[in-house]
Image (cartoon, rainbow, N blue to C red; front, side):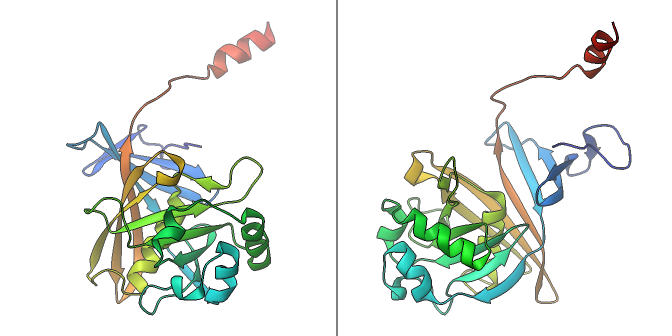
Length: 231
C-alpha cells in the first residue's frame, strides 16, 4: 500500500535523486525512489530493511529436502543460514547446477522444513548463471496454497545479497553492487540490481533496483462513492 510522504509533501515528492514515495508493506514502510533510466522507462529503487543473521542450518538437513548431497550446498566456506531483510529466509548456497535448473521436487518436505525452522521461504543462490554479466542465479521457494515458487522477491534478494557480502562471495568494498537473475524455471526470466553499503565493517543499507513498466491503470473515486452512499 502506497502511503505517500509522511511529512505531507507533494506526492510523489521530488528529490535530487528522483521522486520519492513510501510504500507500506508487510516488511514495514519502505522508501521507494523513481528515476528515469537509460535502458528502461522507469528505474525503481527500494531501500530494504537491514539484514539480521540467524543460525546456520546443517547442509544435510536442507539436502534431504532438495534431494541432493550436502556437499552441493556450499559456496566456499558458506553454508545454509537464516537471514532476514523483513522476513526470515533460509539462504542456501548451491554449487550444483542441476539443483538450480531442475524441477522442484519435494515441496511438502520444503514446507515441513520451513515450518520447523519458522522461516518464510527458501532462497537458493548459485554462481552458475545463464548470463555472463550477472553475479548470481537465484530461486525463491515459498510453498503455499497458490504457488510454490516466486519469479522474484525483494526480501529474498536482499537476504541473498547480504549473505553474499557477509560470506565474501563478492569482492569487499564500501559499496558492493550485485546483479542477479531469476525466474528462468518459471519461464519468466528477470534481473535485479542490489547495492549493499558498508559502515564500520557492517551492512547498514541494502537497496534493490529494477525496471518498472505500467501494465494496468485504475483509480478509486472515494468522494463519489461517499456521495452516492449519502444520496
